[in-house]
Image (cartoon, rainbow, N blue to C red):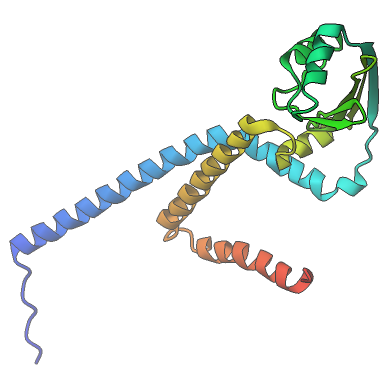
Amino acid sequence: MASPSRPVPANDAIDERARAKRKAQARAALMRQMVQWHWISAAICLIGMLLFSITGITLNHAGQIAGAPKTTNREAVMPAAPLSAVAAAEPRQGALPDAARDWLRGELKVRAPKDAAIEWSDGEAYVGLPRPGGDAFLTIDTATGDVAYERTDRGWISYLNDLHKGRNTGPVWSWFIDIFAVGTVVFCVTGLVLLQLHSRARKSTWPLIGLGLIAPVLLAVLFIHL
């Protein structure tokens, strides 16, 4: 005959309940923290995620989306003072002088960045002005002062695609992409923690996460040839 089980001492029962209570409180605190980080990162990254998701589709089908490039040409004659500054830069292969940049902004409504480099060819200065969604350049004849500016716009879809790639967008947009990427990582990691916290009540959690991992791996292995 089995001996009767020994009753749990009252102090042990109290300690067990206290540990369970502390564990539940810690779990609740973790969940509150994850929820807070999750919704804050979601709010900050929402528009960025929409932008990068939509432009991911347009980039994936870039060959099927017809564009209508628009080219704009402007011409003028540069006065002696800024022209002399440009000519003086020729031996140094430097950037476009401030005097020339100011004149271009006032006369041709062209904003050249401070680091716009000059390429020289037989007394002619060529300045490339690449931009998201298009391209632009200007030439300056240091003998006559003739300035020719050409700008090509490829439309809003091309502009947004270049924002997605960070093409010719400058350092500030590059910083934004990095910060946005960190925020998206926070969003995903906190979402994963919340899924783990709720997984006991949602049995399909881990199979679905596994599917999200296995599906792209199988597609890459089976359909992408190295």
